[in-house]
Each structure stands twice: as C-alpha cells, then as structure tokens.
Image (cartoon, rainbow, N blue to C red):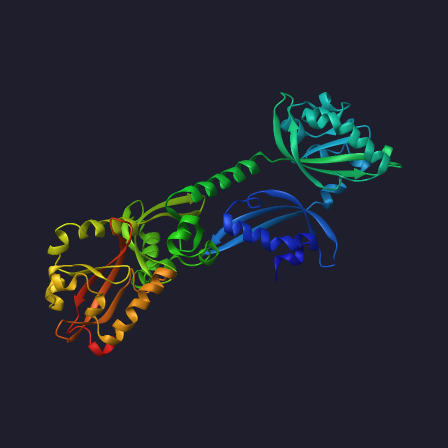
Amino acid sequence: KNIKMLMPPDMAAKHDEILARYKRTGVKNVINTTRAVQAMSKAGEVIPVDLDVREYTVDGVKLFVGYARDRRALNRIADESDLSDAMVRRSPEMIVVMNAAGKVIEFNEAAQVAFGFARDEIVGQNVNGLMPEEVAVNHDGYLKRYVDTGVKTVIDGVTKTHARRKDGSLFPVELRIREIPGRSRQDSKFVGFIRDRTKDLVNEANAAVCAAIGQLMPDGLIVISEVGIVLTFTEQAEKAFGFTADEVIGQNIKMLMPVETARQHDGYLSRYRETGIKSVIDSTRRVTAQRKDGSRFDVELRITEYKSGAEKFFIGFVRDCSDEYAEVIARTLTNSLFDVTPEAMVAIDKVGTIVNFNAAAEALFDFERSIAIGRNVKILMPDKHALRHDQYLAQYQRHKIRRVVDNVRNVLAERKNGTTFPAEISVRETTDINGEPLFVGYLRDMTGRVDAKDVM
C-alpha cells in the first residue's frame, strides 16, 4: 500500500509532490532529519510522532526507511503530578516547563547542557530569557492573548525558530508546546519540547550547495549506485543526452550507452566490486554515448568513487565533445589532410551541394572533383534515394532529429557509370567559416561484406 494511508488527509495530499521534488532536486529537506509530525492509526486516530527518515540503496534500489516514535507516552509525562519527576529531568530531549505568567518551573538536564544555564539560574525567571530579543519582546503578549482568548497559534503545533544560550549566541530549534490544563487557563502549565536543528540545517545546506554546484557545472554530472542505478542527473546532462532527470533517475546507466557497451557494463561494475582494481575509476576517457533519440556522440568521461558509510557511489563528469569534434572536421576541410585521408570524404552544405570531395571519394565514385563540387550530392545515389534526399535535409534542419547525423548506416551508393554498391556512411555536422551548416560524410565500400539487397 502507499505510505499515505498512515497519514492524516492534509499531509497525504502533499506527500507525492514532496517525493517528486526530492527526486528532481536531490535537496534533502526531510531525509536525515527528525521531525515532529502527525500519523494516523487504522482507527483514524491522529497520533503525534517523531519521524526520522533515512535513505538507503539496496541492490540498486533506492529505499526510504522511517523510524517513528510515538510521542503520546512522552507527552503524558508532562502531567502536573510528574513535573519534577526524574523521567522529565533526565529525558534526552530538552524540556522547559512554564506557568501561565511565563515563569519557568522546570528546566531539565538536556536543556541545561544546550543553553548553558544551571537549573537554579532559570527556574523562577521569565522564559523569554531563552529567546532572541525580537521574539522575547512580544512573548508575554502572545501568552496573555492565549490565556484571555483560548485561541491556539503555537500550542500543539511545531515551530521552527531560534533559541538563545547563556552566552548570547543563537541556535536553530524546533519547538513543540503542550498545555497541561488547570482549573482555568490562568492555572495551566505549558511544556516545551525543544530539539536543536543545527545538524539538520548543515545537512540541508550541504545538500542544497551540492545540488546548486551540480546544476552550475558546465559538464553533465551523473551519480550512480555501485550496481549502476542512476541517482543524480543534472541539467547539463539532460541537455547532452536529451532525457529529463525523471526519465533517467532510478534506471540503469546502461540506457545512456550504445548496446555493445551496455551489455558489458554490469560486468565491469561486478568485476570492480570483486577485485577493487580501478581500470576506469579515477581516469579520464573518451567514449561513445547515446542520446534519447538513439544518436551517438563522443564524450569525455571522468569517474570518481565516493563512499558514505557503507554506501558506495560513482560520480561521472560527462563533457560533450561533439563541438570539439566538429571543429576538428572543420579544420580538416580547410587543409591538405582532407585530400590525403584514405577514407572517402564528401562535404555538403545545408541544401545538399557538394563543397568538397577528396581523392579517395574520386576513386570510389569515379567522379572527378571538378565535376562533383557544386553539384547536388544526389548524383552519388540511386534515383529512389535521391528523390527523397532534399526532404530529409529540410526535415533535419527543422526538427534536428538525428536519424542519420552522428550515426553509422549502410546505404546504396552510385558511381558515375550508374553502377551501385553497398557503402557504410557516417555523417557529422559542423559549420563553415561563416557559421552555416556543413555535413561531412565518411564512406567505406562494403562490397563483399554487405549484400546490396540488404540496403535496397
């Protein structure tokens, strides 16, 4: 069943969004904290509990474990007859008890340690001595208003505020106040349960800073568990791969790899767990990644290992090298390397006009460069493919769907004499010196290796 069945309706209505927000941002507002919340029993009774939520990863599955403590018993110790009982004084939680005039009548050992006051220094004094001045100045008025009207604004709720130590320093606290009714509200006593939130704020700040750094980094940042489940996927990673974080988090990292790499990846991780030999970790490598649309692109990948207690994570910094590769191609087009490259290379502009045609392409197609340059690349294709090529180019430039660009495909090519042959083509996109689109095709004759019928 959904955990919401254990919550009052108002909390249950918000819970899915709280989980979704954590999945999106990684900011831990609830995880690794202890909070006073309300739970609901099977009978519909609302129960005050202290809830401590921790996150674990088991066999690649992310789990949230909640430790819930029923506060009803602790609240009952604040009975009038037990205010001086050792159970209150020695409670690990800070407890401060005051009367309706705001005078402290009990100040337990945990409170003495946290505030730096001895019990005798506080008992009989106004409780506002434990508050920042801007809160203290109004406190007597708040208390009197409640005694006069009975309207609860703080009592029975949870308040995040600051407390003041004996030395004047402030610290963040979570405050819950319970009323012990007397014959009238003037005779009531008020029990304050106080929890130091300093560690919570440190954890929240660290998580927020880490999340912000991850989003501001120019490279994509991906965190995976030791079995390959994606835990973090930043905005830059989204841009590089075309996936949203919600689509990737919780899935195996293999979804971002070509199939031939993906099928071996679990083995790499398993071997590292068994041997501890770092063949990839703590190194920088140039690898091929795969986008959501199936197109492939070159990335520079740096992987580092991070341990938190018994947990082990791998952090990958991913830099898209597509632009860098395109620059290499652009430089190649303008120097003699284009001509001496043994692989056939054909460069076309955005409308399909051939702008460069190297010596290997001349030999492959039996076309002189002087004849090929300036003509449409369709002269190198059989008619049935040539008829659709202009449309393919136009559609790509409108929608940028990479069915051919950045992929390797088997096609049917045509020589000057009209004979056809199977060829393997890899197309890369770059720009010319004026910033206009340029497409460079690398071709290999696959005669004898691929049946022409298979690429018809």
